[in-house]
Length: 81
Image (cartoon, rainbow, N blue to C red; front, side):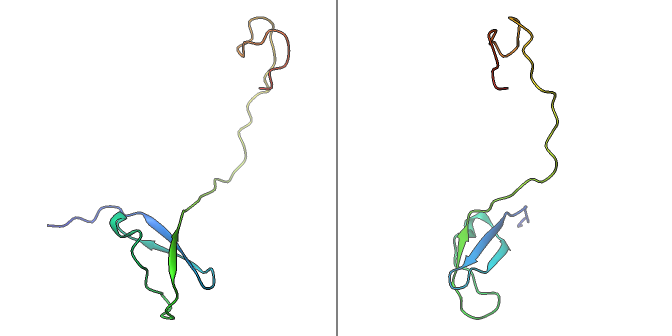
């Protein structure tokens, strides 16, 4: 009996024109050759995927020195945090 577990999505870039494709593949197949989805015989190589997180930054209150008992440990001046 075989089970279908979640497989990672890998990105592959075309060597000839830079076209980028994504494939859902088992980890064991990550570096195996990729067939050109358009049938043109182009060569694809795996690239390291990156991601970005969007949204507004958190708005934490500004750090203020409160004297010798400041949490940053600097009793004499700005700590930069």
